[in-house]
Image 1 (spheres, helix red, strand yellow):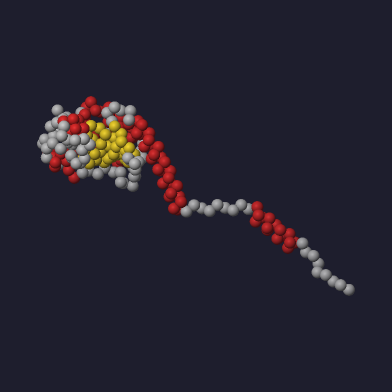
Image 2 (cartoon, helix red, strand yellow; image 1 turned 180 degrees about the vertical axis):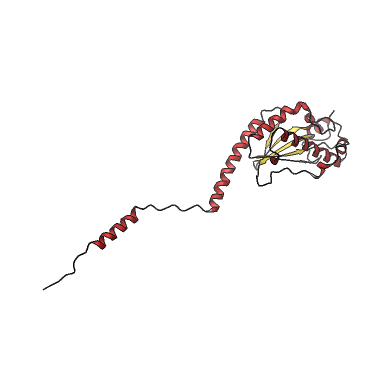
Length: 219
């Protein structure tokens, strides 16, 4: 008389159910690494910076008193002739230039990812140290004007470079007039503090030191 083990379907059914459940549960995507998140955020910030930069350039070029030069690294320079801004050997801004600075301040104020470095320049007439002082104080005057017109002070800094960076020959009166200028170097604003105003050591020189320069070709 033969005997056999009774068939029990429950273990097989449980196995099939388990396999079916494994086949239908989707795999969860891996969480992005901190490095990946940082790269994505940097890309988004760069995109926003480029958009604001391009908009600002377009708006600033609408003023006939300004010229805009773009650099390969993405920065750009807005040039304003000092001959139009200041009177002879003076650090006080010509009142007729106020609309120009209102245009600059409103444009940059609308684009918070842009930082501004105001750079003062002179021609080579007179003492180089006095020209450096004069250029610094003129840059400071423009800095103060932009801040008074509503531009966040943390985004604006200034410095003077005297006669060290001419863009035209100083041999002629016309060339010297071109070299007496104020440039605005526009770059990406770093809210970690690198965009804060840095006052040049010459900026604290007494007013009469700036007025004593022999830069006389502005007449």
